Image (tube, rainbow, N blue to C red; front, side, top):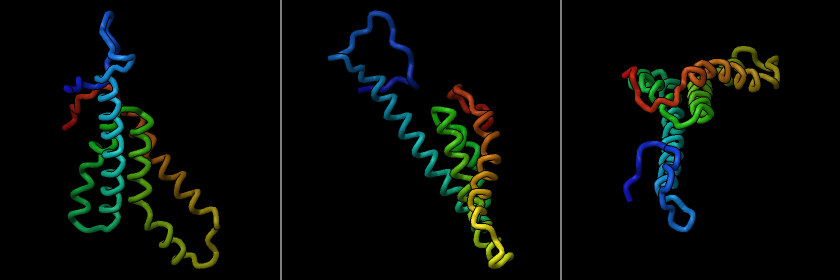
Length: 135
């Protein structure tokens, strides 16, 4: 069955088979797939960036697409948070090596907080307009 573009309100008088609108179900599955694909690609891009290899740095140019394409603002925030956490994971062992035993056990919460602060602007600029104008 053909899926329409992103979820649209049900039209007046539209027949629904057995109470289940297949196009809306199909749209929901596609949105979930796009959200999961965005999350996985954001993690991959962040890990690629953290390796500091030129290919990983070049791949990081796909970060805006991975973080702004999800269907909801919450999913966009999750994708950008995953990107920041994956890209900044070398901070944890680096600080442990630099400071030694004097590092606080609360440092991972600081790592998550800074990642959340870095990813907040991406959630703010997310729009429900499904057209990607910046590419």
